[in-house]
Image (cartoon, rainbow, N blue to C red):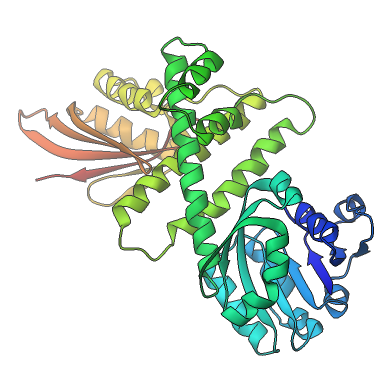
Amino acid sequence: MAIGFIGLGSMGAPIARRLARSGFDVIGCDISGEMLAAFDEAGTRRESDPIATARQSDMLGICVRTDEQLERLAGDGRLFEALGDGGTVILHSTVSPALAQDLAARAKGYGVGFVDVGVSGGGPAAIEGKLSLFVGAEDDDLDRARPWLEAISHKLSHLGPVGRGQEGKLLNNLISIANYGMSAAIIDVGVDLGFDRQPLVDAFMAGSAQSYALGVGPRMVQPRTGTGATGSFSGLHDLLQKDVDHCRHLPVQETLALSGLIASCDLMLARIRRAATEAEGGATPVDPHKTVDGYFDAVRRKDIDALMALYAEDARFTLPNGKSFNGKEDIRAVHLSVFAAGSPFPNPGARFAGAEGIAVEIVAQLPDGSERHTTNHYRFDDAGRIRSLGVYARG
C-alpha cells in the first residue's frame, strides 16, 4: 500500500518514519525544502507537491500546523480529487472540530474516506509506536485505517464520528496546559517565598503533588540561551494558544468548569510571554495587583505622572456614562480635569482577580461629603500596565 504523508514537522516526520519502518511504502511531502531534506528515512520517497503526492497514494496522512494551512491544502477539494475514489485521508493535525467535519463532508463527495486522529505522546512515542490516539471516524473508514493507526499507537480510542477525535485531543490538551499553568505558578510562588527552584520541584515530585505536568510545566518557562532561544518561546506559545483558543469555543454547558480551565491555560500563556520578554533582556512584568495599588495611591496624591506611568501607551479609559478616552494623552487630560475639580477620595473594597483582569469595588468620598459607589475593571498588558480601565456605577 502506497501512503503519502503531508507535513514533516516535529510530529509528522516521526509518524511517517514509524510507518515506513512498519512496512508501508511512504511518500513524504512538505513544501519546506528544509523539512523535506531532513526526511531521510531509508526506503521512502520525497515529494514537494501535495497534489502529486495524493495521486501516488492509496491513503494520505496530513499533519500541518494550523487551521489556515489545512484549509489552503484541502479546502478546494483538489487534494481529495487527486487521491481518488476509494482513498482515505488520515488527519493528524489538531484543528477545529468543525473544520475536520467540513473537510470530511467534502472528501465524501469525491468518494474519499476521512479519519480524524488526534495524537498524544510526542515525537519519541511516535517513533516507538506508542502514541495515544483520539479517533473520530465512521466504522468502515476506521477499518481501512486501522493497520496505519495500530502501527503508531499503543492505545487507540474510537470516540465517535469525525470531529470527536479533535474534541478528544483538545480536551486532552486542555488538561495538560491547565496543569502546566498551575505547576509553573506554584513554583513561581515558592521562589517568591525564597525557595530554590529545582530543590522545590524535586521535593514536590517526591510527594503527593508529583505529576507529569509538574515535571514539565516549570521547565517550559526557564531561561534559554543560544540562537533561537526567544523564538522557541514564541513557537511554544503560539502552538499552545492555538489549542486553547479552540477550547474556548467548545459547545459545552459546563461553562464554569471550562472557564476555570481556560483561566489556568491563560496563566500558562502569560507566563511563557513573560519568559520570552525576559529572554530578550526585558524587565520582569509588574504584578497587576501592585499596579492597582499604585493607581489608588497616585489618585489619592493627585500625582499625575505616577498615575500615567501605570498606563500602557494605547490604553483606554471609560467613564460610567460610557464615554471613552484612548491613548495616554487623552487619559492624562481627563484625569487632570478630575483632579482640578476636586477628585473623589477612593476607598477600595472587595477585589476580584481573573483571566479578564482585576475588578475592585470602590466607595469614593466626594468633595461635598456624599459617596459614590463604583467598580473599576482593570485589564493589563504583558508588562503589567493598565491596557484598559472601565469605571462602572453601582447602586
